[in-house]
Amino acid sequence: MAVRNSGVSDGPDAVAALLPLTPAVRDRLEAYVALVRRWQEVKNLVAPSTLPVIWSRHVADSAQAHLAAPMARRWLDLGSGAGFPGLVTAILIADEPGAAVTLVEANGRKAAFLMAVARELRLPVKVISERIESVAQRHADIGAVDAVSARALAGLPQLLAYAEPWLATGALGVFHKGQDFGNECQDATHAWVFDLVKHPSRIEADSVVAVLSAVRRR
Image (cartoon, rainbow, N blue to C red; front, side, top):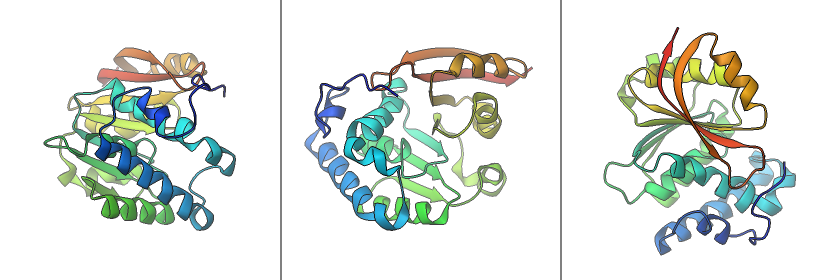
């Protein structure tokens, strides 16, 4: 994928080009990236080819979830992987009253990494290492959330099925999607009704951050 902000050096400024960063947030982001690099060799957290551009390809791209739903304070991130976008969201809102981010990651190695980062950076994060399908029934204590996020997880119809327990109670769906999103939307409308706002990605050409609301089955 082509990167839109290729003129920005790959560092914290890639994120600062999108939104203001306090010194505390910048420090947390730098510590997080350092942890990704340290754990990469044993956990295989991200594609090795993306490490040289981790700030733009992963961190800044992930920050667009918060940009798309800036008032959301209670987040549920599905298929969190190495924490993109869930841990980035948690870092960006960590100092806000009521901030709470639940990360769902079935891979035990990656879940261990998420827990380590949350602990070390003192983030308002809970990690659930289970399959997404079981989370709503087994973890009712998650409660209502403001937004459900996912990046590179599944097609839109499957994402809506995963997120339905929370979307049905009013949460926004905030999903990073690529150039095939038009076809995914068409497929989804066979079974779902929703309002959609598309935010063109400021990082990846031909990509969007899709914000869905009023989601219900037909």
